Image (cartoon, rainbow, N blue to C red):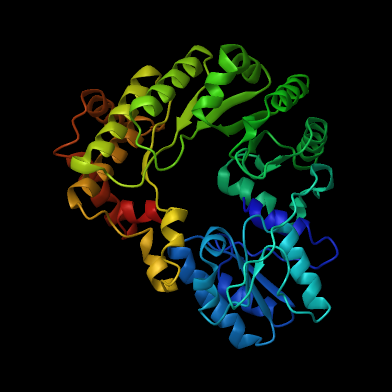
Length: 429
């Protein structure tokens, strides 16, 4: 669910807000252009890479339909390199960081016919660094207005009445603001009743950032009837800090899965690799399934980082058959690199996260390993062919032999025959 856009819209309770989700709208660009004819502001959340092209195309179409409309970009790319966005000529301002308060202030300034310059957190042409946005008080954060989203459409797409929910903003190493445990439990109770929820996903990087708060939330969920299942993202160190006792309490409260995400960009070996394996052992003992997100920025010299990541994924798979261990290439360009390349145009930035590694062997190795790890950990369903593929994938993962990947090419060829497109292309999209 687009929780970022939901948070922005929830801060504009006095406005008529429409959230356009390009995944569900048949013609999202036409929909935005239609709405923009009578709108006062268009906000677009932009991520580095291919989404830049979409944002640029939509913004240009909207500018042609309504030249007076104010267009504001936010999101990761606008945060780190706002000048590349402003240089496009179709963006009036960029919001850096968490955008709720800056965007609300920008909308108010538009209504009052004031300029956007000088608003904390908002960057306009000229490169003036805006004043920092004051850290909000947790009690003053508005409730998420889920009525802005087509919640039933999300449930239908997921095949489950599973709701994404955020109980905090920021990360513990920066400007971290978390809702109180009592408010979280009250909101979840109301949402569960309104939408007849089976499950909730705490969609935030630092759900375990405040141990006491998590304990209170878990205790409240454990007392709830009917039971509400939940899952959350955690760091390996969080698992170790809480120990086996806390994991058992989480399971008793309805937690049925954790997403373990190591720090992005660090090689998955040495202390980091040991930390992940120790956390996995605790999760196995607590009988708590987990998905380990093993991301790589680059393959490393001689493919060393890639080899360590694949080896770690295999060891985790052998530790517990319920663990999922996708090895992924991190597409995002690190902020340090972005800061030194501010003058790059949007087209260049759009190509950055989809550009292949210089070493074609590394690309093939990653694609092959990811395929067999995924098939070994995927439910085969009732089809005999899928069961056979899973057995072969399990054997390959156990042996660490990914060469002569006949099965992968056969599956890809089958996808081309059935759909006209390569399976790898479908997954990338």
